[in-house]
Each structure stands twice: as structure tokens, then as C-alpha cells.
Length: 400
Image 1 (cartoon, one colour):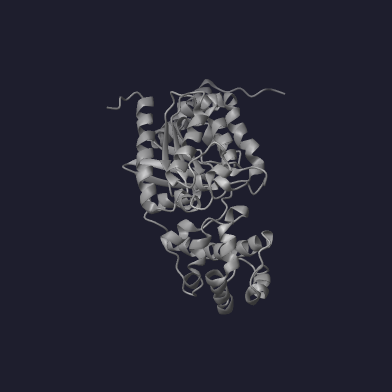
Image 2 (image 1 turned 120 degrees about the vertical axis):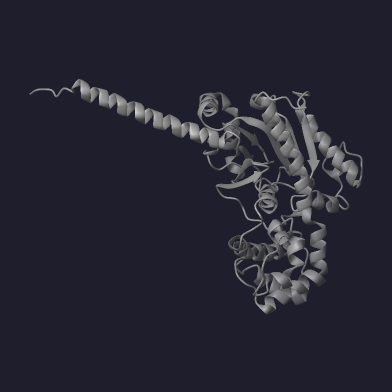
């Protein structure tokens, strides 16, 4: 049997085709690089109800023209479910605290716990929910002790609006949508442009049981060096990474995002959870857990020279809670009583103490209310400027 041989003309043609293929690949890579090199990528990580999804909604309001009709329609079921769940949580709280619901509502309360969250209330059910919420002394007593059981932060907002929310022609307002709560699953990507600078926000959901995967993504950064080097050379220009107070990471695809160049860390913690425990671990205080996590993030070598933007969120809930729940019950070295300003500064100081290994690194702190569009617009403007200045300095431009 003989072996087929290529002629010199055929070999020259093959080399030409290979060079053409390589050039097309490089052209595609260069086009992708030029398109994305100025994109600011923002990773939102956080625990359930820490406020990250609310901030993402605010970006849609501020920079994408608000919510589409389809998005508003999708929120109707979520908002109604949140409202039903809020009343269920209060009833269950009464049971846990051994507070007897008044006899005239007792039977309804028992039946209400059995209904599905994702359905329309009948007129009778709606009126009974309104009656219990507005008139029950037992429910008021449970609200006063809300730190002793789980209760949605926006419970009061939704229960005050039962008449509106369960109208057949109900259309959610922006504030209704901002107050709504649904667990984020997977990775939700939102793109927007500010002053010709493209931004991409990644909202990440998950469970506390998978936190080890989340920490592993950062602790294993040495193993990501080759990926990062390839990214710098061929792909994306820079990224601002926003680490929202959290225990969550569910998708190892985040390694691809986390491995991009980091210009700033934004860490969001809830001010109002100082007297609450984790749902997953009733023996663990939420704020202490947050402080531990924050210190762990700051100790990572990867972020040694990275400025930190700290959002102390849910200031509105905190301002109401501190009037009746003293911070000193949980933190023995706090002696400010029910003074909101003193409590704020104490909590801020506790977070700043976590930076003990790198006192030269700046930490920019803000007290925020994620459901307040004006507040988030102001804080985001400041944070965005920090992120963009860091990028200019990193790419060789002087900021004056």
C-alpha cells in the first residue's frame, strides 16, 4: 500500500488556510477585547434579605428606565405571596411565643396557615387579614417581639396595603417591587450604561450550606493566576467586585467572574439584624456572623491593596428597632442605650476593626436604605466614582 503525499502547492494552501484561521481567531479576540475592556463588572453576593437584589432593582429604575410591563406582571404573584407569608409568619410567631390569638380570629388563623401563598385571597380572607392586622392586640405583641422569630422585613409595608394588593386589577408600584422578596437562584445578570461606561451586575443566590464553595473561590486564588493572566491578555479590562454580606454562593461559574481583575470591594451588611439569629443556625447571631465573614474577606491576600466600600444597609428598619431593642443586650461593650446615632457608630467601628491587618487600606462606609431610590442614587454615585478612579489609576492615568 502506498502513502498519499501532498504536493508543494497543497502544503502551501494548507499553511495559508491555517494562517487565515489564526488571523480570524485573533481578530475575534481583539474585537471582543475592545468591546469589553472598559466594562465594569460588579458581583453581588449576599445572604437572603441583605438587600442585594433590591439594589439591582434600583439600578433598573435609575439606569434602565424602570421595569417593563412583563416584569411588573411577574411581581404581582411575588408581592401577594409576600403579603400572605407575612401574616402566616405573625401567626406562627404568636404560637412560638405562646401568645393566644383572640377567640374571634383563632379559627381563621388556624385555617389561614394551610392556604397556598400563590393564590388570590377571597374577599372574606382579605377582610379577615385586615381585621387581625389592624385590631389584634396579640399580633401587636408579636410585632413588638419580632426579633424572637423570623419575620419578613417588609411585613408592615405589605400588610398595610392588603386592600390594594388583592384588588383584581392590581398593578405594582416601584416601591411595591422594591419591597418584595424572592430568593435569588443561580446568577442574574443586569447590564446598563452610565456616562458611556458599560456596567454589568451579577446577582448571585444560594444557601448558607454552600458557603464553603464561596470562600474556596477566594482562598484558592493562587490556582486562578493562570486564568487571570489569560483574561488580562485577551479578554476583559477590569471589574469592580461587590461582596455583599453573605453566606452564599451556589454556582462554581462564579470562579470565571471572580477571577477577573478587582478594583474595589463592596460589602453590604444589615444594620437591623443585630438582635437576630441565622435561620440556618439559631445559635448564631447574624451580625456576629457578618463581622466574622467581613474580617475573613479583608484578610485575603488577593484584596490586600483593594479599597473597600462598606454598605451598612436597612437603616430604616434599624432606626425603628433600636428604639425598643437595645444593642447592649448582644454587645456587652456598647453603652449607648437606645441612642440610634451611638449605635450606628458602634456598629461602624466594629466593622472597621476588622481591617486590623491592613490599616492603610481605605474603607468607605455608607448607611443605606436599599428601598429608598434617592439614597441609593447618591451612594451609588459616590461608589461608582471610587470604582472608576481606581480603574484609571490602575491603567496608568493620574487622578487630579
